[in-house]
Image (cartoon, rainbow, N blue to C red; front, side, top):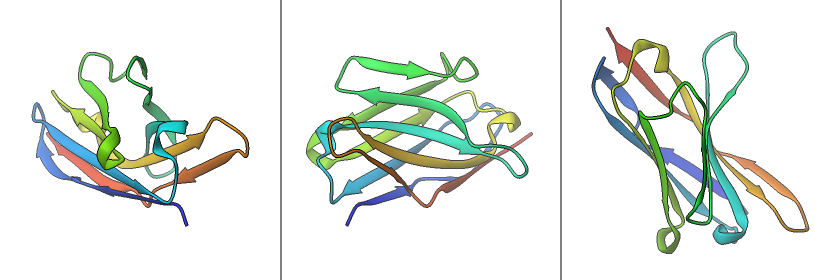
Length: 118
């Protein structure tokens, strides 16, 4: 059974930093594209960042230069380091694992709340 468990969310002041983590189990971590997405009430879930291997990293323009995605293969853990946070970054952050080889798979964590106060 595949599980993605996020942690590390919380309340932070504008300009502060926070790191959220996602521990994966029940899957072949190295064959999955790992990504972070976020969602605010009434809006669609939006892409934040993704990582595949050690070199293929993509960021949404809204977080480029402020957020850093990374992963620890040995611990099957994906991190999202968020710096210079603004209230616009307030959202529930979700971890996603997408299997890139057959059979396909697409898995989500339960989400973790990040709140940035002004």
